[in-house]
Image (cartoon, rainbow, N blue to C red; front, side):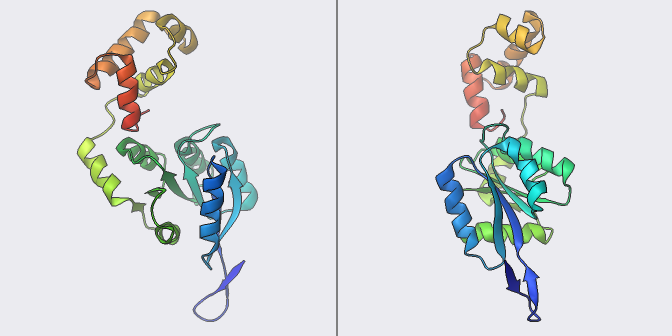
Amino acid sequence: MTTQNDTGGAATAVRVLLAEDQSMVREALAALLGLEPDIEVVAQVARGDEVLAAARAHAVDVALLDIEMPGCTGIEAAAGLRSALPELKIVVLTTFGRPGYLRSAMEAGADAFLVKDAPAAQLAAAVRKVLAGERVIDPTLAAAALAEGANPLTDREREVLRAASDGRTNAELARDLHLSQGTVRNYLSTAIQKLAVRNRAEAVTRAREQGWL
């Protein structure tokens, strides 16, 4: 697919990879972007662990990544892309406007962060802007992230809290994470105190609401 540049010659369209596990959403986004004369969706995947291979196979310019996908999250996929394909531009899309997700996406190397209910024209504009070297962030989320502050949890506390989210006992957590039960209790207790909640279930809920897990 080509478009005409300002001098009347043919210009190559922006090659886009779309990663979204919900097929209806993925197809709708692809159809909307396909209406843009200078953008072409050349690859679609439904899993986060398929992103890097698809980006390499299709020589894409921009990757549009949903956050919550099987295999690995969009944020984890973004980090992998940034490491393996540093010239590739990355746009993270999410249904959930959580400040913690924004911080995590930027730390993973994303060039843009937008919510899915943004107008299609805004998404297309973001694709063009990141190619021009700009960073694009939803202004409402940016303000919320500044107001909320940084993630108070350490990497280890997040790991233990994430593992505890499915109801595993301390003994099971200790076995699965190769820690002592006392260490597991300490990490959970510290996370609960930092999040100002009463128990591990509330800690998991609070951390997820903020995008910190």
